[in-house]
Each structure stands twice: as C-alpha cells, then as structure tokens.
Length: 228
Image (cartoon, rainbow, N blue to C red; front, side, top):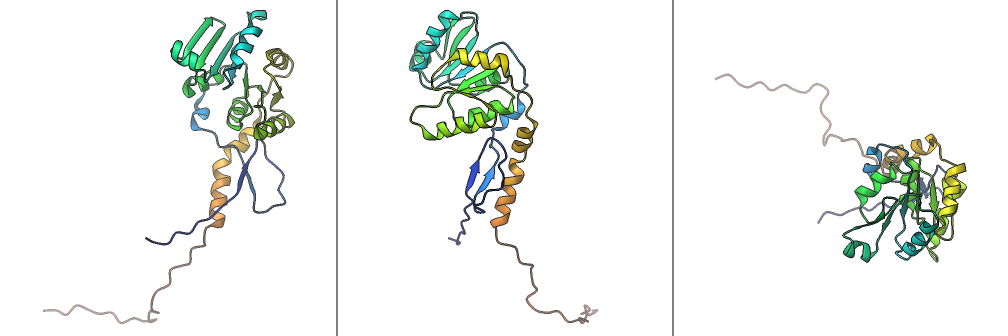
C-alpha cells in the first residue's frame, strides 16, 4: 500500500463572521448547510413551526393550546406514539398537527413559517437564519454545547432563548422583533466552499516543477530516417 500523508485542519463554525483569532492554527468557518436549504421558496405564512425532539413537550404544547386555540402550530417530534399510533401525523385540528421527523416536510414548512421554536442545535438555527426566520431556542438541560449556541445566537441577534417551552414569549418576539434580511450572514454562508478549499490548499505540499532527467543539448542532432 502506498504511504498516505494526513493533514489536520481544526475548524470551528459560528453563526456569523468572527474577528481574526489569536490562535493561527484555528480556522473559523461559516455554517455548512445542506443544499436543499438553497432550493427553498421563502414565504411568510401565519403559523409557528416547532422542532423539539423531547416528546415530553407534547403535553406542554397541548396545555398552552387550550388557552390559545387560534394559534396555528405544526410540530415535529420523535414521539413513538405519533409515529406508530398515528402513522406519523397526529392532527388535533386544523391549527395543531404533530408530525414524525421528516426532513423534506420540515424544510418545506420552515420556508413558509412565521417563526421556528427548536432546541439549540447548531444546524436548525443556522438554516432558519438563512431563510430569515425568527427563532426561539430551548436548550436541552445539561447540554453545554446547546447552552453556548443559544448564547451566541442571541448575542448575534439571531433569535431569543428560553429555559422552558414558552409559546407566549415566542409570539411576543414575532410581534415586535421580526427578522429582516441578513445579507451579511448570507454572504458569510455563501463563502463556505471558498474558505474551506483555501484552507485545504494551504496545508497541502507545494508541487515541484517537473525537471527533465537529463539536460538536453542546446542544438540537438536531428536524426533522419534513412531512405530505402
């Protein structure tokens, strides 16, 4: 087997561009979004999209909904009850539907929603930001990475954070703090391929020019094929 050289580039992804870090060996890169995000037709419809993997939040949603029946919620959950007993779609009424996890359906609804409520996972928040959707993050308790994500996103004006599932807080946010087109974020994400490829190229060994094995004479003798 031919020898293989390994090159390691420590990458750190953030919601927005970061001033040059002191550690020259660390490269801050834009979020890497799936290609389907760039294919969505963005609209603004009057419903809130919910993506909370903890099925325990279903009870919280149902209790809140009793007091606010006119608010439309489309919710995605990993609940086995929704998946097995309701075949992946539990329709309470026209304004409240629980879905089993489905990437295609989730992205299509995200492009149309008025706002997103989700855990503070990096990918979902970044996708909502690219589609200019307001976000309320509910970090998973005891999950330090999600805690940091929520603080970073709030600091950058990407959304709000809540320690519990509080739909009233989200409705207030939608009423007074709607997101606008974030061109700087779009530009940052769109440079992802350029930045990563530049980083990879920078650590690869430089190609040496091919040298001839022997120096050719300045006036080489031309051999002619003898005539027969």
